Length: 195
Image (cartoon, helix red, strand yellow):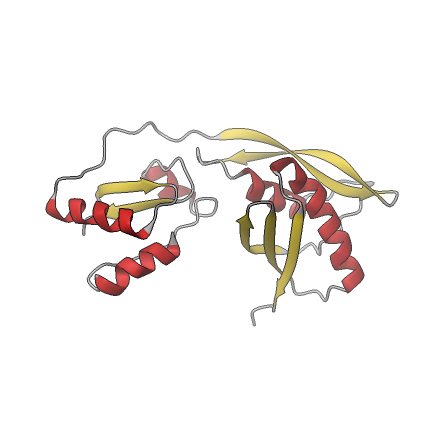
């Protein structure tokens, strides 16, 4: 939706735009009772929701919706159910005795938004049970992920140098972990550490 909203902003200079990551900013996610990623909110100057777009839309459709919002003929339905904290279970893969094996993990989701592929990647980065080998450096953070059909590009950051051999091992674990979501092609990229 960033590209579509960027096109709208190019013509509507008076609009302000802010990206909020639902898995990071739980307070905003829960205040606006966001249930889906992505959700685009149109707010008035005092932060009151005028309308929301859930999911991806084409530029022409967003333009039409925005026109209706501007003229006041389109408003959000109210009220929305409160978000609830849930405990979710994910299967990730780690190495044990040189083999990629499944490991069940749990995570507390503080919102109602489900992002299973991203959550599984985050669980893979941080899970380090005894007796298993996780080749991702302990300080690895997920910076960006892009999914397209059966492929994904995962962009990570770490202060540690990572060899090609370690990168291949990481890709193996990502491939096993994401296979359940239909992902069969993995590209792993590293961002330079910020100073």
